Length: 299
Image 1 (tube, rainbow, N blue to C red):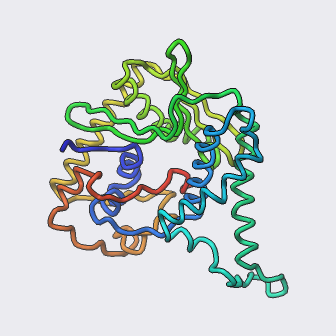
Image 2 (image 1 turned 45 degrees about the vertical axis):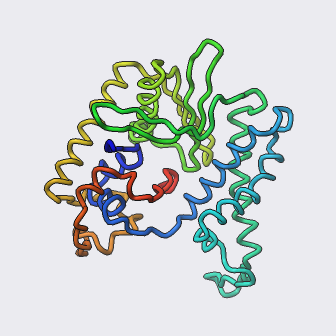
């Protein structure tokens, strides 16, 4: 089996090699994130709405999908249920004079925030005029022995064959300083589509639902070749780390949100011993069977 890399795992290594190790080699559990779970829920509703006839694709119809999609997600991953208080449980607010918040209150707030993202989407796109060619499309391409893989939220194909790659985000749109990081994932997908379909996508579109912004980018062939070189260089660095066992941490602003901070040597912690099969795990992330944290988790 050829080694494989997704944009999420590539981003992990770029952010911090030790984070890549914790997720891919040590397979350390991470508690479910409310932001990530809500993002997954909204993604599911925006995918399912296209099952409806075009005239029925309304905000109300899409919002109505949320409870059923949440029930399905909890059935698949029961730990997600912990994000809401247990039935009948009361959550004591910080202000003792304020009324207590019940599980029902929290559930209403949970779905209302998700519904807000749906309403924002309808101000940015009109699904009654869209017929996606693919939704939640798994893509992969092998480049010099490395399998590049991932899931595209939506692929639109024009009658003349032009491709538009669309990704939904429930976080805020990035500042100009961080646009490059956001576009890396999209260029990664564009490269895979180019290698598999022989067509450079015309447009990459990131739809940010928290602040109602759309980031559009028209990639060029030379940029995708540069992305390919970058991915190859990243993989070469991962191979070196896997061979030497040197997964040193790289500190940054995202350390504050890292669940593994207590065992990170950069903060006085001690990582667990490397497993005996650490190298083989490092070079085939598909073997972990672990779902990558959603990209919206770092909003």
